Amino acid sequence: MNMKWEMAIENVFRFADGQVVFVGRIQKGPRFISPCVCELWQGTERVKRLRLEGEMLPETHARKDLRSVSTRESVDVEAAAFAEGGWRLIHAGEVQE
Image (cartoon, rainbow, N blue to C red; front, side, top):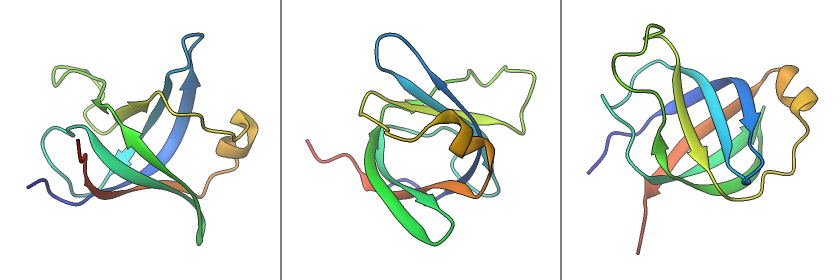
């Protein structure tokens, strides 16, 4: 069973293949984030439930304070909205096959 965690989103990247990558800080969490289900929050409002593919940056990455996870699910939020701050990903459980 994985440890619960919460990410304060600092940046979001979208790729042509539909992949969305969230980058941010996690105060307490697992050493490596496995595929899981998370909820995307803006302030006190839950925006969407997402299936994440797991951690993107290798452990040897120079910025140890930043973590990244990705999804291939649609995230209908403009990049400018993420730049305003207050966005979080909250771990909601393990992937059920």
